[in-house]
Image (cartoon, rainbow, N blue to C red; front, side, top):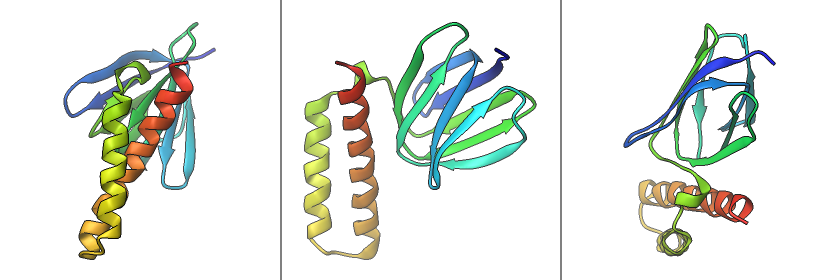
Length: 136
């Protein structure tokens, strides 16, 4: 299978850099798949599960937060605020964050605070999902 170069960069670390056979990115419109020789594109990334496969390897998963992807010339750049492998996720902290976000949404403060709590809850849910599915 043909490969392309991928750079998955979080604000605090490099999650993966190297050759890749396939990549699936969470976007506002659903999962967006990328293979070698994909057309040029730029897309938004939302909190969710990112999947990539190195040549000859098994699919690797990560919980990512909001960011963007730049695709072109057989090279993909993923820039996200956070990216965590399933084994890096502290499920107890995630549950606390989800509960705090739900409580903040119920407080009915400003629309800005509500949207921020919504985004935090979405990130927590995606982290729980990745942890649960891929650490068992």
